[in-house]
Length: 262
Image (cartoon, rainbow, N blue to C red):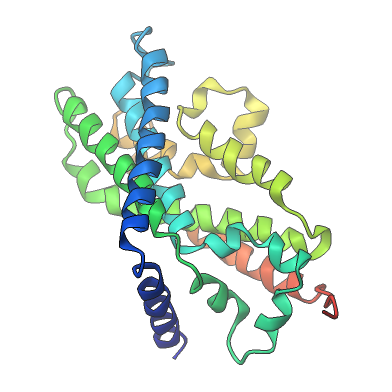
């Protein structure tokens, strides 16, 4: 029942967005170009070195592409979660609570940011180009088969991090500063292999903010860096566990919401 309602709400949101097709196309292309320029700057830096801690440019490109796609998919389907502080500041969350539908379902069905698809496409292009070059030295059959799983797990972990951050707003009202530490900085860090970071930072990326499981852990095995086939199971388990904990934290946080009375 909830799934049918969600699909109807999402369909309505997409129809509303697509009324302005040129704006959608321009936003999607411009966002993709901005992210491509970001990668080109990264490539220009890495091109001066043969490798970084055992990872060459194209292997880092795979990490970057997976991170970009994961974050872009989250920003596409959950823009209202990302901008959740406005619901606290402006009192808009009250209107969600009085409806006979889960507030989270309503948030996920509002204002899909389709322009972020450009970022996902850009990430897929980088992955494809990187895989082409990596295929000269590695067998990528298993990687290609497992890639959809990686991207889904990356999306789930991204969304879970965002949901935890949004939940903090029930106590603090504002979350923009928190997003720097829970989303922006970790995902920028996930563009690179985790072995370049100091031990305390790696501990955070493997536990509290588990972005290491979005791309680094499975790629260790798939690119013959280290580990075993169980490394492919870890992202799935971490994604499911983190999603469960994020959802539980969200439901817990709602109990502490105080209406603005407006």
